[in-house]
Image (cartoon, rainbow, N blue to C red; front, side, top):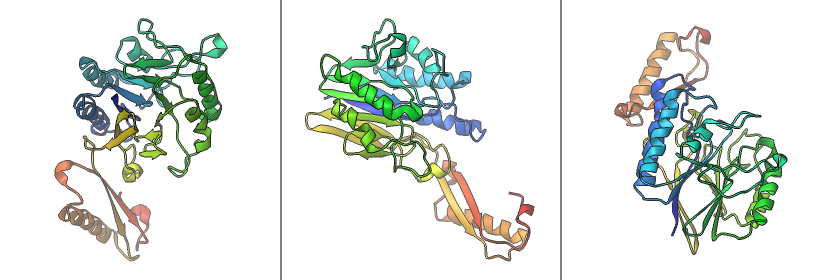
Length: 326
């Protein structure tokens, strides 16, 4: 039975905290996941559902990180099949991106629908010589479709994708679509999320595994929609989300998908200190230190793991809070 690894939102080149150590965390997570759950589990292929990179324009070291991970798969004969996300998609009006570069060098299979306005067929089969195509057929009766970042036009694009699948001459036993977009109700304050009903044309067209990305939280819906979440937390707020990589087997009885989380991630600890309203600066500093020390004693913080620690101080104090050297 076909087996594969589904990952998304790797965000190589992450630089939000302007910290080189933190940026490397994203590479270590990526490499460890591939080593343990792609190579170690001997999967047939790996799906990357968008946002391999944090930025459209990347530093040489970031490109090197991507190539190291992808060559690990290439050396084992495991194809990496990818689409662009909103972070790494090609700029409007251009025909290239860093994912396109990786595809031209044979490190990924970048599935891109054709541009109908330019007279191209929406879904043409992958051409390994030209390194182009919209869908790929693999052994075991597996057909994988690509897409691109559609933003607010996603509902219209979904119908276009479904129509294009319907006119193909045959239907594979297992049909997978890579799609970088979020579903409503999964995270708060997320504008532009799709409704479940928006996705139903894909189910009618025969998609039995919808491989999502974009939202950094793991979720699944009705055993055909799967989102693994980001490999690493992109913010302290995301520490509360479950995330990981899906190890999937396609069987005659359906889909067996297991979320794998035992790989290198930097621990995140969030602490809360509530003041009583009359503390002096010195007392507040002492209380902050005591809060961290207590967390170490209780093993909520394990210094040898070098976790990220957030200490949130709330309440009132007996001095101007702006005087506190945070």
